[in-house]
Structures are given as C-alpha cells and as structure tokens.
Length: 368
Image (cartoon, rainbow, N blue to C red; front, side, top):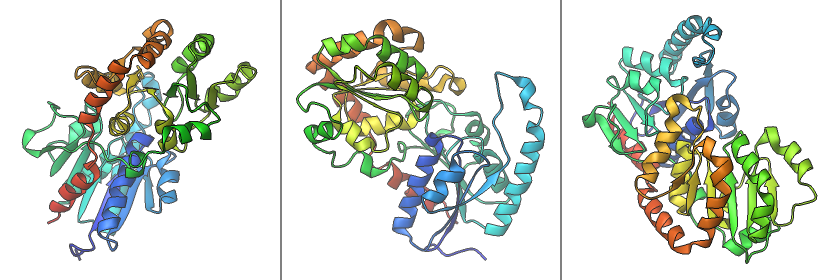
C-alpha cells in the first residue's frame, strides 16, 4: 500500500565520503521539518562512514556490500562483480520491504545499485549531483532519473529538460549568524586584531598544505599573520611535536567540529576543492584559495575550482605549485583588501542558500 502525500516513504542513498553523506542528511532534515510523519530510510555502503554518521543524525540505515572500483590497482577489483550482484539483490529486497514512494541519490557508488533497482521496479528517483563534473554512477543513471539537481550550471552530461540548478544542500547553521570575528579569534586564543588565515584540508587533512605551512611558518609569523591550521589525523601529532615551541599566533587542530567559528575567525581561507566545501565557502563569502586534490575521481576537484576561478571568485594552485606559491600568495592576498572584496563578492553571487528547500520541492513534486 502506497503512503499518503503527508507521510511519504523516501529512500535516500549515497555515501562513501562526507561530501555525499552531509547533503543527504540535510535533505532528510528538511523533509522531516516539513513532514514529521514522513518515513525515511538511508541506504549506504557497508564499512563506510555513513554507517556511523547517519544513525548519529537520527536516521535508520541499511548497508550494501558494494565498493568502488580501484582504478590504481585493477587486480584488487577481482571481487567487484560479486559485490555488485549481491548489492543489486539486497537493494531489490530493501525496496520490496520498504515500498518507497520515491528515492534520491546523493552520489557515490552506494547509490548505484539502489537507484538502478528503483528504476526497474517503477519507483521514481531524483539524482543530486554535487560536482561540476558528474561521477560514473550519476552518468549511468541520468536517463532513468525523474529529475536531476545540480550544484553547477552548464553541466553538459545531463538531459537539459530534467536538470535543475539548485546548488548543494548545506546545513543552514554553518553560514547564518556568524560569531563576531574578535569573539571567534579569542576562542582560539588568538589576537582579535590580527589578520588570520584558515587552512582546511578536508576531513583527512592535506599533506600538501601541511608541508607548505610547516616550511614557511617563520614567513607567516614575520608578516604578523595568524594561522588556524587543520592538519587532519595522520599528520597532527608529528606536526604538533615538530613546532611545539613555536605556537604563538598558530592554532593547530586535528579536526574542526565547529566550522562556523572557524569561518568567522578567518580573513582568508585556504581549502581543498571538494564540492561541499566550495558550496559552504560560497555561502560564507570570504576570499578563498583552492588547492584541488589531484587524485579525486576524474580530477573533479580541479574542475570545481576552475569554475570559480573563471568567474574571479577564487584563486587556485595545483598541488605541484603549492610549495613555491601558496604561502606567498596567501600573504599577498591578506594584505590586499580590494582583491579580497572582489573575490568575496563574486563568490557570494554563486552561493545558493535555498538549495535544500528547492531540492526537497523537486523531490516531493515527483511523488506519484
């Protein structure tokens, strides 16, 4: 028996990385705000972070044994066909038991088997593509989707009549009512009157960024500039030990849980170019320098960054350029208030604060 419009049953599928999970949770939260009686089931990949993050956010999740293809070591893909077949079979069973009105996929290999089976079983589904260049799963499913929500305009790979330029779903608390800058800096034990760079290397951290700051720490101090430096887990202890005597004006942390305070404290932000990071940064609207992760699938981070550089909304350096150029350029930018204003204004124009609402509007409109 199909559920009513006020209490729809919705499957949300995607995962593998935070970039696919957090948008999925933002969509689920928006549905629940509007329709407290809606039933939501997540489907993710066993052993991946969604199996922990989704229950923490208060939602039920089922795991599939699917794994991504390892392009660097083709021999390690020997079990892929078996995992795929098992995941397709399980996805079919989950859909049969849950009987959803609609499904939405937020990308990552976990969404492939689920959306494929949904299309075969007559369940409409929506794709939410975060990057400026679509992943394999979404390209394979594009013709079967009822609608496709994209974060970047001008994506050529999707059918025009189904594609909606909504932006990426971001939790509103990240960009609304930022803490005053002096209060934010004081909370890090930093001088409220000094200019400050924020470095974020993604959830795992970035060795490229870490090495650059480490090599040029004295230059940053000589410029009387402060640094909030998120190292990631792998390098944290090593860096802390190496620079422990030299921490005045430097706040070093393994992970930033309170991004809102970190954004508020910064004059200039240096970041990897993941789709969700860029979507958050465009709503915060501060000048940014992007360093795309060169090994991201199909080099999508470079394409994400280039779409901003082309609109004069960010500066960008390749991984190989970082040792020579990053610190020098960051210090130049932090002294150039005209350039900061120009980059920030252009970046804000690209922000989509109503993305989550628009995606849920589209999703609900597709329920038969």
